[in-house]
Length: 415
Image (cartoon, rainbow, N blue to C red):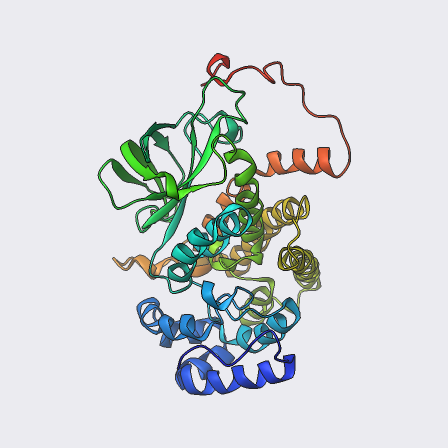
């Protein structure tokens, strides 16, 4: 089936009816049945590879990013109709693949890219044909991202890139990357940066995996030695990359707060609803102290969901989410870690010992989620940095003194 016959003129009721027909025709019956039984049942019948093989049907429908224009891979509908559609899709757990493309890269392209760039890159992102990563953080530029040292030097119609990036999620799978590089070291650190779209499948790009406590290598370090980017793949003006990156960073905070396409799979672990079912499975639900702990977290998760809905509504209306994305990020980092810690507590001894096996999936899912959640305080900008943003932009507190403000980047001490 091709794109659904839903347009900006379609009512929410008609859109919901069309989506239900699409689900009946396109989503395998076994998946629908298993999804109603819960995540574990769904995982038993829908393997990651099976889902990737089926995903083109999802992309063709326009439902992956329904508020995007049809020429960009969506349906061009408003936020209200999109929410009604998502109410039909949510129980099926149809995860959006390529979240760094759908969230981070797309945010910059919509805010600062050209229509030529949007037509080139957005449809393959929706179809998951070109996967994306983000080359921002560096060994000496993490929390202070604007001090980055990766250089981009103009060479005719191209830029030559040299430097090192680190903590790059899914760089080993990526076809393209959004990249911040310094184009004028004589300007202050926030002003001499330019935003690029880098082809990861070229000479001069080396990806090295970083092994995590979970045994995976989701993060990587990337070495750039003479990699090239055509000037046509520059987003925004030269030396204006810091302003362009604001849309990406805001969208990233939205994603790691649980509101983007990455969802809980990106954060690690299960939601508070799973806490309720696990407590019942382990016989702990009868304990009033456990019930109280779970319901406090459940209530916090509802608040997080409402905050994220406000951010999504602002984005759909063409507004900047501003500090609200930092609120969601700070809240979710702590909340998710608390949920995953309690998940492990409920498992008891099953969380600290399990049968020996060579199967990498033998690690209990709850334990994996707890260990993965340790990264939540760092990804999307550290919790402390986001608290600074909230303090300065929401509470009106004075900015932290910076003796190097306004000085050329090349004169600023760096680690």
